[in-house]
Image (cartoon, rainbow, N blue to C red; front, side):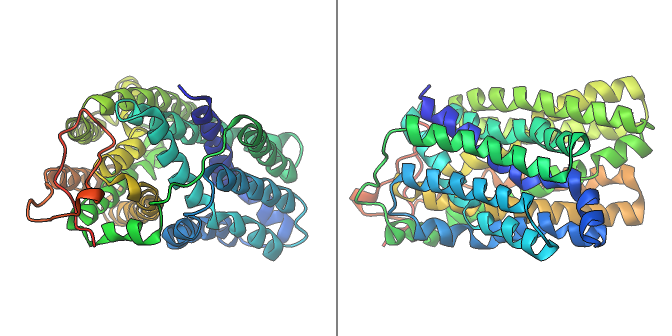
Length: 403
């Protein structure tokens, strides 16, 4: 596989470590700046909100910039952001240092996913995107615990230094080992945004939102579930969350291979597998050993959801709109995660932690139902803007509305 793809995966690792690494040091930051923990939590919330709101716009504005240049620029901004965060004299300064790179966060994902898919070719596109997204999975398993450990070993500033160093290595790799990637003439805002007139795209994006809501309605409260239902100790919960993440890395890799074979069948099997895993967790959640096994399977299945969400949309998009569509996905990811967390919290508050499973299952089944929506045959397109699906093994869909 092209070395550029692995460098982009390292960049993804650095960016996600920067975004979520702050989670483990919120108590230290709360104490340092004399603020409440919920106020400190805005360092994460403001970052996510910025990503959700600005993604499509910043990607459109950078559409004509050389792809290597923009990826390198994003990583450079994340390096500077972490350095500034480490030297932050006040909470307001830290907030600004954290939010500024969030504007470019979706640009990296949109460009990296699109470039990886195009460089790998139609057959291996899902595996290439899976490699980039493995950076996300590994960051959640290793990046966040590493930054937390650095804070415990030294101080909270060390967490930002580590995240900055990771981004610096990715920056160097991008600058010295990735060839120039000029933008083709057909790329542009007008040709990209034309896809917004297709109902098919919006159904796919709705599927992403509902799918992520189903995933995170339960996953957001997994630690609480293991503590209250399975009666695991704090140490046991930590170990099981690590197991969840490690099996998730393997699951992400396997999902890339499966999606290369058939996108929609893999998507539907994924959703039904996650539903079955939730039902098993409900039935056997009170038993320690069975829950260890179930949680390993849950992690293996769950983590591939981000890749499934990406490919089940982009596999059917016109090539000239690929980066624009990829820029929309972080917004719908964040919206789905937020909705799932809120709905799961509502169920827990009113019916108890174990019943949160019955919020996740209907959402996942709804996403399963939406996956059967097909491209309307009445939609037409100019010949030069015909659909070019990412996955050659998938049936070619009907074109979407263009100009």
